[in-house]
Amino acid sequence: MKNKTLSQKKSFLNKFFIKLIRKFGYEVIDQANLNIPTKELNINENLSQSGKQSISIPLGKTEITRKVKSLTIIIRSYTFGDVDNDKVMLDQNKKRIFDLPKIEYTLRTIRSIIKSSELAKEYFKDVDIKIIITDDKSNKENLLKIKEILKVSNLRTELINLKENEFDDQIKTIDIEGKNISKNMISNMRNLYKSIKIVENEDADLFYFLEDDYIHKKEAITEMLFTYEKISSQLNQELFLCPADYPYLYSSIDNSKIFFGNMMHWRSVNESLLTFLTSKKMINKYLKEFKLMSTVRHHPMELKLHEIYKKEYCLSPVPSLAMHATNINSIYGLPPNFNWKKIWDENE
Image (tube, rainbow, N blue to C red; front, side):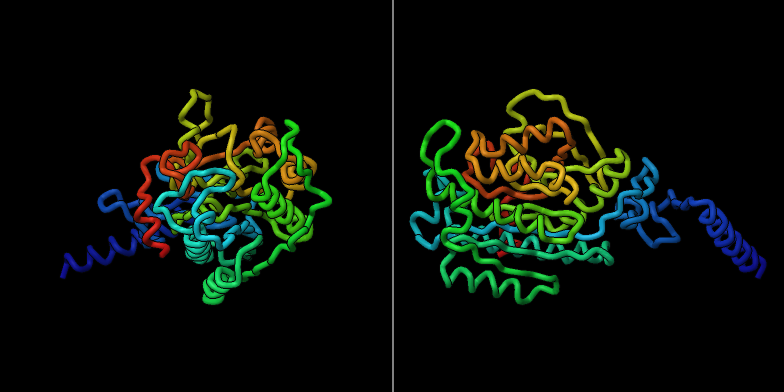
């Protein structure tokens, strides 16, 4: 009886102590089992609260001053339908990993983004997430497959078909070296320009520009949103986030600043391809450069984007949050130390 009374007193004192220190903004961690009693979470789980605070053990708490309000994801789709040509990468003679028609990579990209966005909504309940697909030249069969995937999602989605000659009066057919640009590359530029025009007319906070051959981990969008809030709050400025840990970033010795996002490390990079997340403020700030990138063929195509990175932070995750499904030997593609087959199969 005496032991029971002592146990009840101890339990009462523990609860009182926990309530008291929470009023001062602290949390209790049970070091015996690594649990946080007040949250019913293990310290290895996501402890952050969207729009309020980012918590990393043992780094502590970061108050969020830059809250994410909404996210629009724009997927640029190209699936021409010709079985032979469709297996070859844009403006190249190389085939992609798994050696399948382009539509397979596009569908898995869309599935992975929907899964990842739906998980993110569990943490960012007040954040509106919308998916827009801008498609150029896909045949009716492929468009139907895309529509079927969008139909089962709970998210707001939209499929936009580009017109055959849309923006022909804006896009130069000769590159900066005086050479003719291929039809495939003009299609690519037209689709990117369409994305920029959507941003100009879309009332959203963050925009994720995405090529249709990036297959994402389920936690990708969650990590990107939490990281944007945290790092932007710490630096008091807007950012660029790239989801891929490109192999070519290891081909030279460059200085990087290392950040800890929500659940993983991020590093500053000076280059990326044309898949990145940033804010509408950044797009408006560098609107001239973005339009130049999509109407004039530079070498590399991302040249204007890289010039922006000299002034602004672009962060890339280590390890990668997405697989760029290119040729297995491409230094611009498959991320190192990444289970490519697992992510591929999960989004079949």
